[in-house]
Length: 79
Image (cartoon, rainbow, N blue to C red; front, side, top):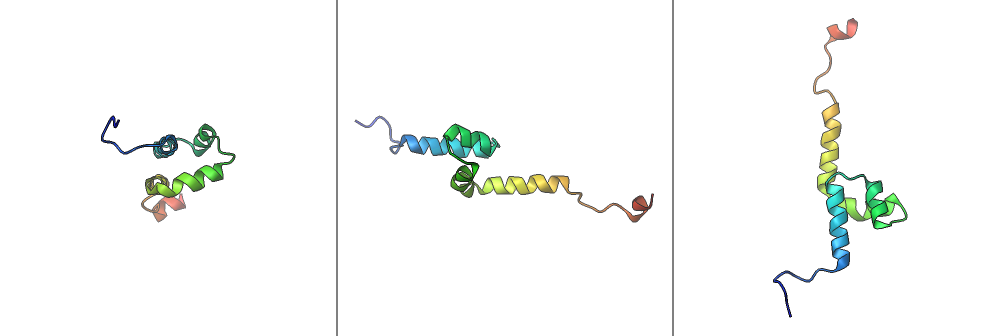
């Protein structure tokens, strides 16, 4: 008997969803690694970050936020 019109979801699919959402929310990869029981950060990173281009964009934007948009004036440098 079918209880809903949703496609079947395996428990492993839910595990992947939870990890992906955690990373997207900004959870440190070490925390996600430990939650999943992976032996290294690299396994977690290789598995999940490749599916999240949003993470790469957010990281680039955060770096750009700390880089000054303009150079200090020459007068300010002489002081």
